Length: 203
Image (cartoon, rainbow, N blue to C red; front, side, top):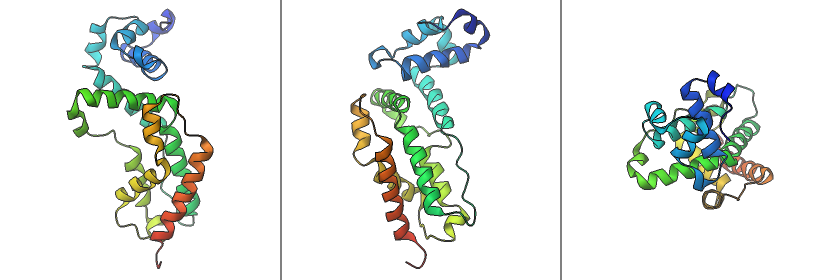
């Protein structure tokens, strides 16, 4: 179903394209995820789309920036906060967001583009990517006051790995796979406890 005519008349061209791309790329079947389908959904020609986005890669990049922004803000902890509780909440929010069906649909499409264009591996990630956000959070003075974290970036990668374990691969190859909330919560709680125990100041 195309974007309703009355909505199309109100939305700027770029927003019409993004709205159509969300529907086709994030909510539709993978085999239908084409620029032709986006053009049809948006009610415009592919030539018009390519005036706004030079390629499908650029369009997917815009959706990725949106996806990261949708995750919301993660304020640094304040002195007196319970770091274990706060870190658990941050980790659950991040993993829940990036393993939801729409996020995984986007990740699969991006991976398929990387196969076609390997140079994308060297492209810079959007500001506010989860690993960067978590590394910044772990660098906050309130955390540093209680825990000795030598490399926050490495620590954030480790925490994500402890929560995801083998689920990341399964989610990428099986569009019907899910990571239930209770699994995310259980793994996040255990990961935070193990990690903080190892970096607590004074042992």
